[in-house]
Length: 256
Image (cartoon, rainbow, N blue to C red; front, side, top):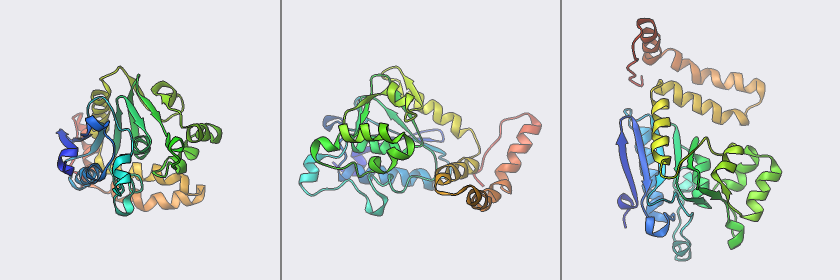
């Protein structure tokens, strides 16, 4: 299966739906999936008519993680220096929302950590079981969970390898919205549509500042955000936003 078959893309207005398409293998991540996801994310960032991405899996499963059979055969789901599926070490500039049905474990869970928001079905299960296979959650979980959760909770997830429910993940702040089974993609597309209705330059820069802020000191943050913000305030879209508000109409964004 080529990368164009292993990962499907579908446009919903200004939202790009990206679907890992290996349902018979529980959407395990092999080389073809990695290249397909990376290519789709490149398309998202390069196309000015696309504002938001949604990442999901086919057949009722998000992803069971790295394909261990492919791993044993010497295949890797890493893409150059961009990490797992090309997004864990180099997340897209534009917002990316994960839509989870079924299992999102190991590398599948780490793909969610690279997403900006997550919508999950109430019967979904999320976790990092790598230690159960004498492996390390090196696709981002071991690095990032302790930043996003209290250390004891992060270590419980990492060292037991046991999955948690979508509701528990939402309580911990790892999932934004929990929905009925089968509705994750629809709810994620709805959320993406709300984000996509906003000024795309402002959204992308706001994401960049918010993701970078934990690495900046208080004083440094004010200095770092200034050069990022100023082109937005002087953009065509900023003037359009003000004009649309004054004229009581919907804005028409150009991304410039």
